[in-house]
Image (cartoon, rainbow, N blue to C red; front, side, top):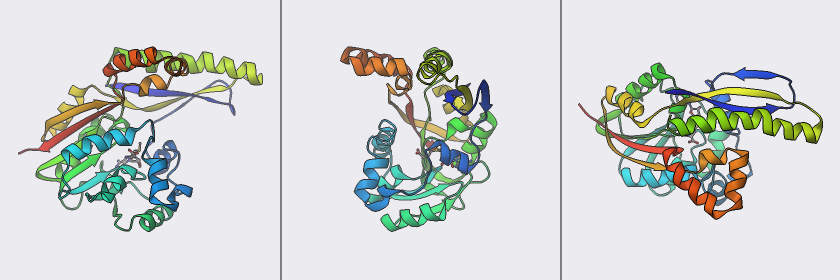
Length: 289
Ligand SMILES: C[S@@+](CC[C@H](N)C(=O)[O-])C[C@H]1O[C@@H](n2cnc3c(N)ncnc32)[C@H](O)[C@@H]1O
């Protein structure tokens, strides 16, 4: 496991500042650009066009591809940490039986979601504190576990396992690329130096102002084995896994993004190299014993 940092410039400060991982619902919501309902809640088509198709470089479409191969429409399913719930609502529209849950939901988001999707169901659930009140056939956990250190991850898997009926399935997203040398080079070297020097110098030339650099401890990066071992300790056996999103980490870089846009050859080469750092690794586990 390796700590995962993100770097950004802040024009309202000088020097350097450090912030910790998001823990509260409001902090997590802010990191996702806010969970407020907006003009996209005018119609289902607008909602999915904004929050599903192409959202975060197609992140939710990768989830959807894997989930459909591992979930049946008859499965009584809960999604934890569902946030705005676009991936879940897309499946719900197609006849899947999914209840959403998260640390919280604002009354406004709940009402606007319900207006658009009358079958929307939501429960408050902190997966670090308790399992679901009744067991489910399947549980979705998308873009969550990067927030947890090893102690919290064990608690999360224990409560997930206790939320499943025997033979029930957990469909999990790694929530970030694996901890390996390439992801280290990108995140701890390239992105860090790009922000602290290249982008800062660019801004300085444009505005004659030296912006501050904010380092956020975004979360944790883990290998497949580390994730599978944590799950196994909670009685969850690996059934299947698949990788997606090979360019996502490269596209975080100003320089590599330009390279990808400039030539098909570099895009193809990076896509090939990116097989070592899939941003999305989907796992399907079965509850045993
Ligand atoms: C990165 S967002 C992911 C939202 C959504 N699943 C998606 O893929 O777009 C992480 C979500 O995890 C939720 N969360 C954080 N800690 C949690 C916990 N202990 N139990 C349940 N949800 C949690 C946050 O409120 C936030 O909505």
